[in-house]
Length: 586
Image (cartoon, rainbow, N blue to C red; front, side):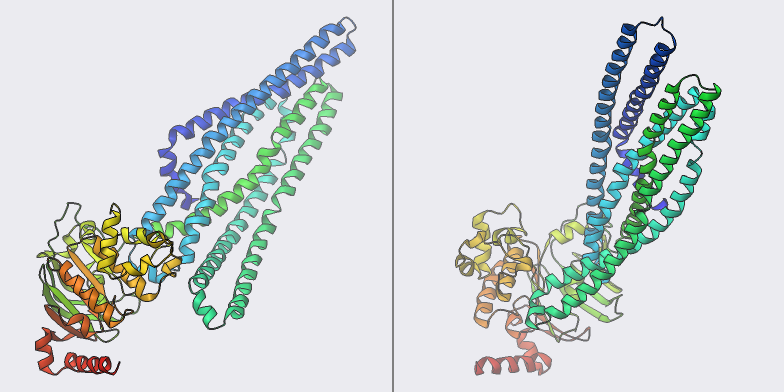
């Protein structure tokens, strides 16, 4: 239960609903207990009529009708109060589910890139959906039935004890056996539930990856192979599910058997006590049978509740694993920061934790507001790492990054990122309209602003060629568009934001040279008062930059303007001549 203690803060938050639910439950149970007492009185009245001829028939009929009406009235009131109890406690559980899902989602948003490298998307989805749903069953039905059971037991046993202490003792004899059985079975449920949830996450992760990579699977004709893998994984999951279901299935028959035994105990010992004169009326036996049957569902629900609690604890443990992770990237300055755009790297080194690869080593440069820096180099030379460090997706291993002369870690994280427009190497678009994908950079943008940004990114004409134009709904990850179109929509999204810093991470790799030239000409005007960093493999993207740096294995091996680097006859000059000759051959 220690994992579920994390949820106590939500019970405190909704304490008024929780306490109101308990009060309603107590009152409902009191009204439900009128029925056995009234039935007992009815039996006694019939017995008195049978034994005493002086008792009039009309008097007995009147008493029986009165008792029946009271039973109907108290049952209706108890039912209505039970309805209110469910409305109070179950609705509270839905509020807690809402809060917990939002808390998990916020934590997912705050966690660093390294976290997402180490965890699979399907597993993360399973924890915020299936696991939270299991926890909701604990804070809702499990808590409600536990409260109901405790209150009913307390009230019913007091009533039973007042009627006949000895018969009450006989009736409760099976309960220790019940408690021991619940303890043993619950422990096994906890183990099997944890294993089942883990396999459920594996299935979710596997299917998510398959659906995301369906084009590759179809291209390589691997449908049958992955179908077989899915069948194997599903069979394992089914096996764990059936294993859990088998142990859970023991609860129902076990509970009913013990309740049946309690009824037999009441009839047998009650009958003997009535014969011996220890109890005065056969109605007492009927009353006790009703009491035992009133305890039937609470006792039977103990197994179900115990199962829900065990499953919820297993799920909450998986959720807590993420909630307890402290995000690596923290906002160290709650005060607002004004970003001008000057970026300085001083002997910056960075090593990726998951692979231990040293991406950057002693990198130093400065880009002032209004300047454009181009970064070129081979694949894996550390170009994209620089972009990630500027937007603080990672923190440097060694050295210093300064924004407007301030250590980047002391700048308000949200103001920093709000001042940056980034076009990643792998353009990601959402399953929404093209217009909304562009407006992702500026939610309140007008249609005119959206079109202006699209024109600057040289994608407006392509969009107008679609049937629904800017209202065209894209498939998952923007699959509706070509690679070049996705890159240009991403560029439009960054432009419309009008940020102080623009980061283009090899975002023109999928467009032809003519389109690239048109985009760069438009960007030249847009970026004249902004800090711009262009990462590219092409000299054509870099030649108009104020300064160019060449990276190789994380180190700067060349830097200067286009004309300076051509004259040095180094890596840049060789790359320029090579790409120039390729262009001429085309």
